[in-house]
Amino acid sequence: MSENELGKKWDRCLADGAVKIGAGLGLGIVLSVVFFKRRTWPISFGLGTGLGMAASNCQNDLRSHYVLHGRVKEQEQ
Picture 1 (cartoon, one colour):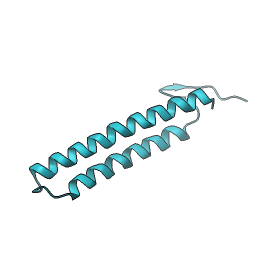
Picture 2 (picture 1 turned 60 degrees about the vertical axis):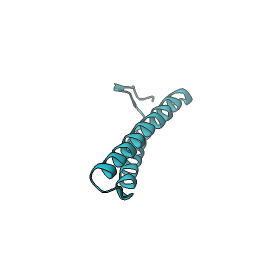
Picture 3 (picture 1 turned 30 degrees about the vertical axis):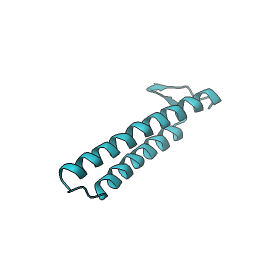
Picture 4 (picture 1 turned 60 degrees about the horizontal axis):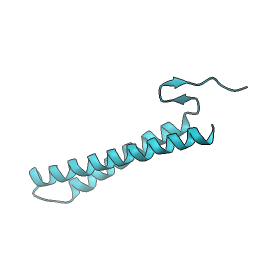
């Protein structure tokens, strides 16, 4: 894997992580205010869920050496 491809994968990981962590945090805040009488555990749960999903997606993306955003790259021999 070239340095350019690795950089693109890391950029996607960071962007995906920011979106998922932000969405989890936002959803946790909304649920905390609306349903759970301003307790903090929904915020922590949403933040942890977003972080876990982002980490899992990043791990899968970095482990796949031959798939680049839907295109299959030929293996080098």
